[in-house]
Image (cartoon, rainbow, N blue to C red; front, side, top):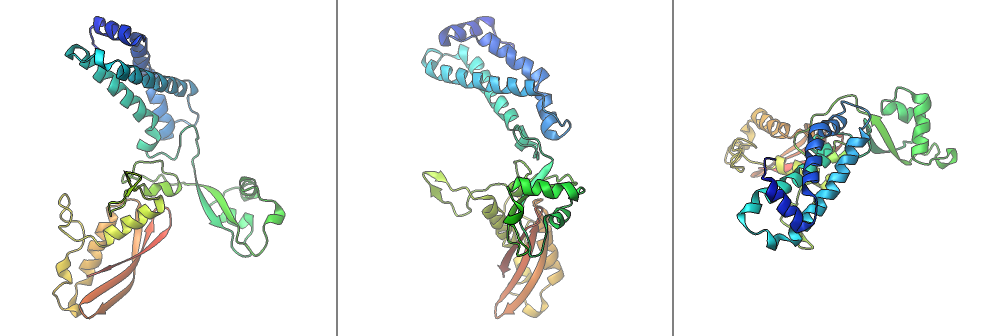
Length: 308
């Protein structure tokens, strides 16, 4: 913040805004409040410091105001003497936005203004299954009370479900294990664990790249990894399966143990995936086809196949 006072004063006069006060509030926030927000999203504290969050909200509004004023009067600040201050103000805005999204950067199960150490999923009530039994299934330690929470959460009266089952219910369960996911940047909450990717076949929708849903993202991820061959990724040339293990070789002498090990190693690099199981191997003419299922960290099974 070691800027000439006259520059801050000049810009303040041009945009008619008290920049000195804004700069001081920002410094105070970084020194006194930023850690409180990180601690909350990291789960180190259970109760959010409301004053710290209020200051962040206020500073975000002020930064937006400052950015708009700078843009309006930029023609009056086109000389080099103003560049350092303008660059500083821009970096301050980026810093505030990063802090505002820190729950995602920290891969937290705690979302903005909503602390919950639980993951919510949708489950279907099976035939002859009771809400008490469903509570046990999701790891409840207080079945007598938690089945009531399930009913209230889903606005479910006793006559709304029968022994036939079939009700789609939103269920929250406490994840006792801390999942450390580095492959994506988002809140580790339900299917958000899969992240969001763009379509591998470049597609534009309304002049913007098509973004896949969480479910489509994990399906694409599994498909890409299943069909990855060594050397196809310049940055990671050893990732994938060696084509020469199959191509041009005697189909009856394929080194399956090596093939499986390379597939395992490929899938292991994506920490949103848990395991994979080969379900079928078919050797016809010049093609070796493999069907297998990949289990995600969220417990879903994604079927996929590859061919050599």
